[in-house]
Image 1 (tube, rainbow, N blue to C red):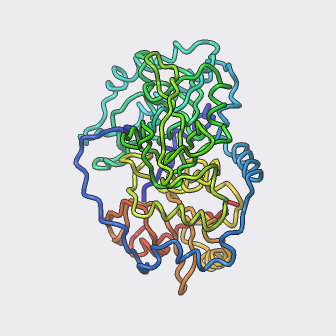
Image 2: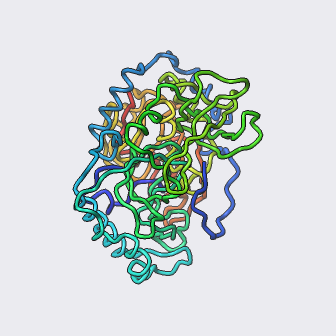
Image 3: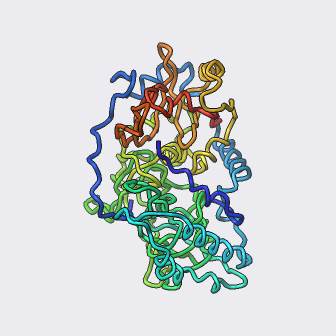
Length: 461
């Protein structure tokens, strides 16, 4: 079951400090998506309604964290998870050697792997030497880096190398590009370390990922303080729908982009003007500097001023807004992988959620830890005590949000790519979307059920 765990080589980098506009476009012909939402294992149609689960809760509207408590919680996350970074606390200068060494290590590590292209042929080492190396040129990183500050002018991919070329781990594994880390959303703040030799790519630090992004997608601000004034504005819209349109005109006739759940839009006016909210967009000018422009959001769109209150009701409602939405490794194909799903759900409620499932499993309260295929009795006991909507269940390479128990079955909502169905082979049914399932999924395969493979439980409280 694939998900957006960062590659092992990336996690081990000694200098690793952290971790809808146009996306990458690939030419391969993908299988058609299964029609959704799917009914899996013991799931009944009624269980695809968030109210089914909310009505079972004794206090669904109890506020778990106030805004002040959430702010403190987010600081704790950033203090504990090194991949989560407050961009506005980055030093204005830093030793260039840290970045040049990291760029060299990333390049050499990827060059040393056996990877395949979309044509299923091995990526030749000469591709790295002739196409990538001349762009990275780590020898040109200055001795002292003077940081620049920017914001994403649209949703954009963060890549391991300055290249749009797809590289896959196994032949035929087209949907899992090993260079794709994630998408950052419109208005995501970034610190800019370095620029590729052709000026087309920037090496950046975002709040939960570091890597290469297309320069055309980043609007550069004159100072960190100027960027902070917009990104940290107390007057903002939070996108709470799966995605919403943003318009260039107050009449709401011309869509300029769609923005996804968890996007923060600084308001240009304190209240709705007629039928629309007025928001700021950061456009990239001809020389890269920001040009702020007003845009408009329909007052009936699925947005809220500020964040929704942090309750079980709102968490579950946010999760079910993504039911049936396409799976996408690292945000590919306008989709969400398993940790991308949980990331967006909690981000839309104000949680500075890490992007990777291993990191997500460390936040909040740790309930228990297990070895795969062990501790059935203890797992069952802990699940019966777990808080629906708040509890994350992690297994190797997968993350799920717990919904509750019924008739001895434990249910989750999660983004998953496939269900294994064979005891002797890797045969699978393609799911490729956000689904509700019980923990018996994959139980008739050689890899074992979701329940068998749970290794951690934690509550985001």
